[in-house]
Amino acid sequence: MYKIDSNKAVKIAHVTFSKLHMQENDIEELLRSNIYMICEEEESMLIVGRQVRNALHGRSDLTAVDQDGNVVLIEIKRNLRDIESRKEAFEFQAIRYAASYATIKDPDDLVNKIYAPYIEKYRSEFEHNSLTSTELGKRKLDEFLTVNGAENSFNRSQKVVLVASDFDDQTLSAVSWLNSNGVNMSCYKLIPYKINGEIYINVEKLLPLASYDDYYVTFLERSSGIKKPSGKKFTRRSLPKIVAMLEWGVVKEGDIIMAKDREDEGTLLSNGNVLVDGEELSMQKWLKDIYGWSSIQTYVFAIHKDSGKALSEIRREYLEKQAENVE
Image 1: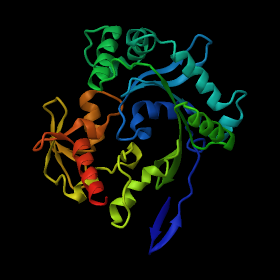
Image 2 (image 1 turned 180 degrees about the vertical axis):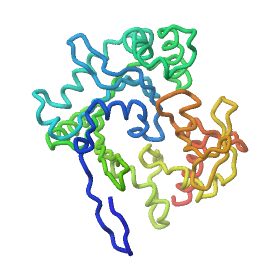
Image 3 (image 1 turned 90 degrees about the vertical axis):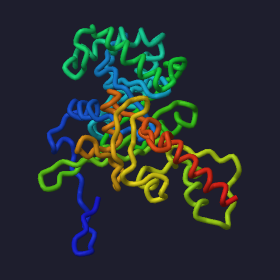
């Protein structure tokens, strides 16, 4: 991170979580309440557990379900020292926990074993106090899976997300190898800064790496002399965001954005946020609060009122048209 001072770039040194007197538990709570920090805008996630004990008495940090019905295990370490001081490798510990989640048979099983106890612990954060924790957990999980079309794919596979302020080469090498062999595992760095007494955290995704193909679309759109290979699919990591869509003119400042299958509306602003009841919100925050999820596929659930299309559909149509123009 750099500060620009009289046209000179001055590097700002990061601090450590220990210097900020933040323990692993503090980082865990930060992510539990703000899981979208490590989610892409193309991803929905519902936190369903914290400090879940498995049959071998291990404790996994955070547990979630994503838009594809995968059970997601999120393991957190404060710093490199915490990773290296463990007798068991960071990634192996997470894999062992994920293997125990593979035994969850169906949504009801997850609710009974994990989600209901989580709701009971954080009951003040949930509505519908007339329902038991089990009833509420079943309702919320069923709705999440149904809306995302994942009822029939629940827990067919598991995902692992590792989070730390830094990683050792052995962990990154192991995760890279596991990814290349079909294990869905990600690594995120949370790098803290303290500036003028305020704490900032930079989030950096280390793995899995984007493939070169993920960047081809951008270059090919701008190069009339290069033909795009036919049948190219736009991957999640290559997809432009709302600010780019505003620049293209496919959506405009002042357009009304609706929440999918809801009556909630917001007015699109020039910076990509929405104005709702006089308050400026990011679309991610606005939508996730409406649906009550921890993170949400922003462009799938944001509907352009005039066209009746999801922002993801408008974006895809524009990219496909541009791709045709360079063939």
